[in-house]
Length: 460
View (cartoon, rainbow, N blue to C red):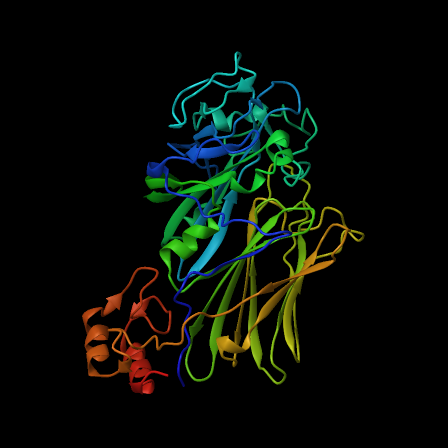
C-alpha cells in the first residue's frame, strides 16, 4: 500500500462572488493600511495574565492591541452597542490534533486611546469614543479580564456585528475563573492529558466593521508556552502575533500535512475546515477533521463525511470546548452515526433546542474516525446549518494534495535503506509533528521501521 499524504497547504475560497485569501502576515510585517471603511484588526497579542487555578480549572486572559487599518473612524462608544466586543480563546496541538481547550466571555470595549502603533500614521478620532484612522488601542491582559465588562457570546451576531447592550449578566462578578478563559488543569498537565503546543487567539467583532465588509480579518493568534505543576499553571507568549487569521491556521503552519479550506455561507459568515489523515497500519487510516466557525451566525449542527460504499468505519470521536459561567448553551456532545456510505455527527435542531451545542462563532470542534479507505477517495464534507435559512447545508470540497510516500523520508522518490537510517536517527519520543513517526503514536520505534519495509520500493 502506498500512502498519499497531505503535504501542501491548500487554501480554497468558496465565496459568494470571489474573494481573497484570509491568511495575514506576521506581526513584524505590520498591517496593510487604508482599507475601505472602518476596519479593526488584532495587530498584537502582547501579553497574558494568569488568574490562578480554582480547583481543576486554570483561568487566563490575554492583552490585545487593536488597529483601525481602514480609512474611516470606528465607534468605540461606551454604554452603547457601538463598540467592539473581544473574544479570547486557547488551543492546543498534541499528537497531530488541534483542539479548542478554553474560551472566555466577551470583553466589551469602552474607550479608545489614540496611539501610533500600527505603522499606518495615526489620525486621531478627536475623542476616546472613536478609534482614529491608522490608530491603535491597547487593552492589557488584566483589563480584558475585567468581569463587569464581560458579556456572553451567545447573543452576539458575529456576521453582522450586532449585539444588545447591556449584555446579559454583564455586570456580574464571581470567583477568579468567572467569565475568563477557562482551561482544565488536565489539559495543561503532561502527566494527565496535557502537553503539546498551545496557542491563544483574540477576535474583535464590531457592527461598523461588519457593515463595511471587513469582518473576516478580525482574529489573530500567537503561540504560548505552558509551565507549572499541580494546580498552579501559567502561560507565556512566544513568537509573533499572526495577524488577520484564526488560530486554526496555526495547525497548518506547524504541520505541512494539514490542509485548510475556507467556506463562506451566503449572506452569513465564514467557516474554516482543516483535516489530515494518518496511516495506522494495514488498510486503515485515522482521519482528523477540525471545523472553526469564525463568524457564522447560522452556525453548524451536523457534519457528514460521505464514504465509498462498503467502507468499514470505526471509532468516531468528537471534541468541543466548554461553555461556562452561566452561558446558557447546552454542552451535550454531538451524536455520531455510521451508515453504509457515510459517517456523521449532529446535535439538536434549532427547532428542538435553540440553545443546543451548535458550532457557534469563535469556536472549533473536532471530528475523527478510522476507516479502511484511502484519502484520495474522500472528496467532500457536508455541513448542516443550525439556524433556519437558505441554504440548509454547505458542501466543502476536500482533497489530499501530492502523491508521495510518507516513508520516503529523504525525498529520493524511493523507499529504501536510507529511510531506515532516518528512522534510526530519530529514534525515541518525538515532538508534534514528527515525520519519522509514521504511525502517529508519538514515538519513533520499530513499528515505523516496519512501515518503511512495508512501503519498500519506488513511490507511485
